[in-house]
Image 1 (cartoon, rainbow, N blue to C red):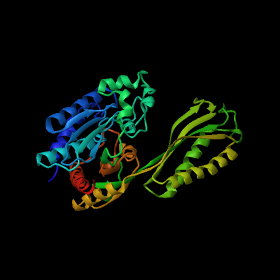
Image 2: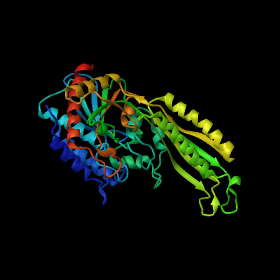
Image 3: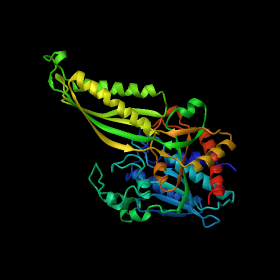
Image 4: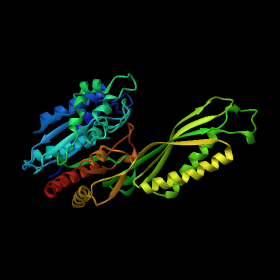
Length: 415
């Protein structure tokens, strides 16, 4: 029994037409017309091609449920259908449609799982006008409550989240009621494009995910002294920008010394004042971000930057103030789900390779309330969040067949 890759490819292309802009990218942010159209397409497909019960919950997550043969908790596969501005057609959408294809394959072969099998397309996984990513799964896992949601406002037009939810079938007054309860879902598996080059570089198509990265961010203020760019001698300058530049290069050096694909960092979100010709920059603000699945490594790098800052302050005469912005710990995936996925990969000829995810995903929230897992499929050129994002049909086929077998193994091995 194998998935129908031609049907899945057709569905990817059909969903990929929704929100497509003139440059070939996808604009499908939460609450947009394209978001509403994508939701209708998914619901219509489920209704016309699957024998399922369909629900839209309080935060407008889309659900489809196929009955099992025994009164057991759900096994759920899925991802999200929204997209970043000018994004690609595979990020998120592939996870929803590959889960859909797996259920359609089972049903056309007359197979029922012991556990009820659920499909989900989460609301607002990507950054959106309400400035909360992985929105739908955060509500399900209890990380956001009704009170939290009632405070959210659209940064573009100031509208509240409830107005958005009413347009797409949700109701945040029910948000606290949809939190996943113990024993409600036995396991969750999310398929996602890798969004990197590791699989391609190794000549592989599929990998199990062991951990979703932690994210550590500091907002940093460099205060020097604005002065005339022509008359201030070099020895008297307190240039905030050059101090920030030295900081950034020292940070990059620390990261490169780790020599690991699983340790990355970025300096961005930079502003400078006065930002004008003829003036030595007086202040600079920026954000420093570290991503790794090792909290120890994160602490070591952040601590090492203490000495860097002391040196810059001493030698450049500037003041550096650091403020913690985010300290999100890594989220290891469930070892039992990983085991079933890796067994399925081996039996379908994909090997048993394991990667960590350097991007955040809904699976991290689901792991808080059930046995969560992820599986990656190859991204051509490592491109994502851009119109050039692409995953080859062969990679999708191989990953989908491994997921289908993993479902059967989970269904047999979990109670």
